[in-house]
Length: 384
Image 1 (cartoon, rainbow, N blue to C red):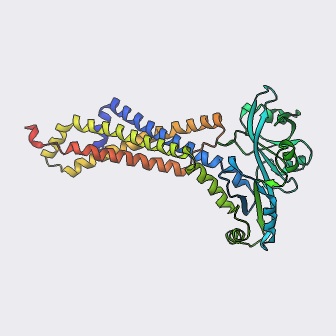
Image 2: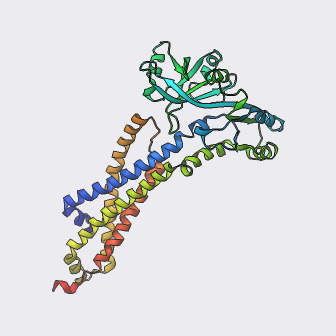
Image 3: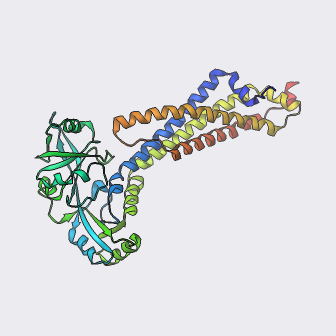
């Protein structure tokens, strides 16, 4: 039995050049949407990796702090005051600041993020931190983020080769005692972890007792939301009390709404959708216009208007599927290149793949719907 080939596919493949142009246009629109969404999500994800790694239940920050790159300090007395709440088990201060790291090979300086912690307690769930905490108890020793950009020098490579690695950090010579993995973000291209005492040596103007983040661990069974509300009522108004998830969301909201970056990537996605819609519309409109006589003939022999409209929508659906496949494949290649170039987590997710596929269907459906208006002008009387 011979398989019935849809009229829509026969129409499309008749003009192979036109079909190729249409698929290229749809693939380009998909790639544009994929890249914009990929960079936007990598922006959000990279900037909350530090927050996610914190081994804490509740976080205290200065009420004037907006994001990790612009933290305001507050007295650690506020943090220790939280111990008055019965459900609090322990508190841990964290120091944060940006300063210059001088590449030991080229002598060029580049800013990175320095994280100061108490080496007696592991508060960061990051590969390489727990096993190297004891090294931070030594003076002028830091842990270096192996995922930092290459502009800082071949630090990780030389350290793994057994070489002694040292560099100037804020004009103070520091030795690399170990490696950990955090990754670059839009706020920092590199990261260091050191002890609280070494942090104050690197930043001599930083007042002792003024911390940037306060971590609160609760006793087993305590509810973080309930305790957080109790702390909000108990602590002074100059302190913002957040659960760990609220702290993550707080940072994400800053990049999404407090800066132009989130808007730019969203706008780029919308522009990709519009470009794809226009391209598909032009292809389908031309397809209908070139075969208007044939459509009129089909009407004359009894085919209904609805049947012909379905044919146009089938063409749009075929274009969407065939254009999405190369767009997805090329995007995977571009994501890999973007990761290598920026060290940002530009990764494909199932949710994003499905979202762009739906947008592609919607893009082609809108184009097909608009192109149908031309089909209504196909009059059977025109063929006689």
